[in-house]
Length: 70
View (cartoon, rainbow, N blue to C red):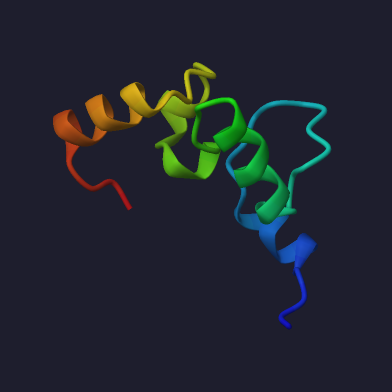
């Protein structure tokens, strides 16, 4: 089984919510947000992530307006 690289994940994480206890632990972050009907910060460009609107609706709208941003 693959080990979670928390420090490496944190370096790539664009989540601006502090204090997030799931930062760097992607499997927990995804599970948490999916339970809320959301996607994690890393699915959004930085300017959208800062709005804290991580809804699937916002993800689709952003993707339709901008296309790929990564």
